[in-house]
Length: 290
Image 1 (cartoon, rainbow, N blue to C red):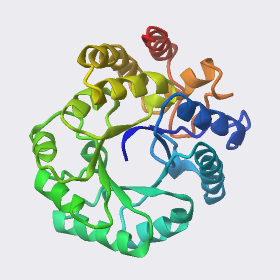
Image 2 (cartoon, rainbow, N blue to C red; image 1 turned 90 degrees about the vertical axis):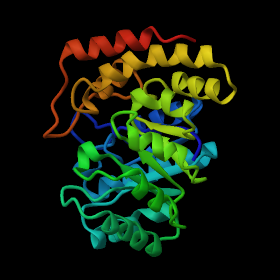
Image 3 (cartoon, one colour; image 1 turned 30 degrees about the horizontal axis):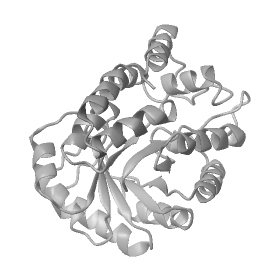
Image 4 (cartoon, helix red, strand yellow; image 1 turned 135 degrees about the vertical axis):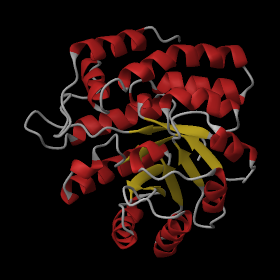
């Protein structure tokens, strides 16, 4: 779980079906551009808006591309309930190298409940787990101590950390030295998190700019601070623009404009983005350094 893992969108055809050919093209482009792995059926992939058959199509396409490139596939899973999360994890595990499992949302269970939740899922499947800590979406805040407890589970290989800031808990987590991977899930914070010792990132923006994110991560890894900072300063406005409206609407529009996917469609309740947001994102994308 090192490097930049591209969190994939799910392209749709003009008639609203999953566009397997565009998805295959996108996945291959991300890996050819330097991404270390793929993430399918995450929030970026509108997973909750797909039917079970569509979810299976996405997994089969991404698994095939991952095998061809010799790179790992991480698959999103998990709901607010433990039993349903176990069911979903068991369904998706056969096509996954790891499962990205969201912290139970809305219910706001205790820290002990969250740890037990992941332990139960881990006991039910044969692939490792990556807890997805995103409190501004789930409503559940986990302290650094609770995150360290999660990382101590044998079934957990790392955490996708999306605090929305470099806050006190983030600093404490990075200083804890757990020996497990911390992956930044906030696209705009990948660079500072890498500098603090994160192993990599899971980034939706890497669908559009895999080369830029891979180059930034490589610069940090090799100690080229000036190059890493230059890429961060160029990628930061891109990430801001891509998330100016609910994701992945702007990202899909940019991918379609760039010819990576055929159509920019998103599913309700998401809406097509405004032209100003898309234009700002494309301007930032075209200004990226080589």
